[in-house]
Image 1: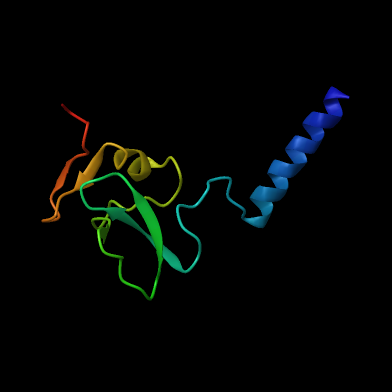
Image 2 (image 1 turned 90 degrees about the vertical axis):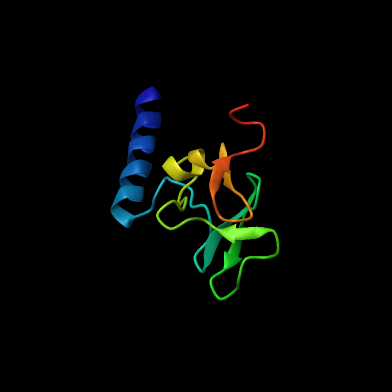
Length: 95
């Protein structure tokens, strides 16, 4: 029985690799981009043809999270931007 379970698991991983599926969860869906709250660690996804809602901004160029848990996703857990766009420690961090 154990051999069957491992075989099925291996087959699933192989199928995902061969079909180009990623096991990483994307931050936003196709047709959207991520935005962050000014002065906080909140985030949202916005349609590509829309501007960020009030209180949100685009992530700084080159520092945009793409997948849950990636380098920039974890970075923005402890950092944010102020009203001038300067990167700062998030509230409650670094105190």
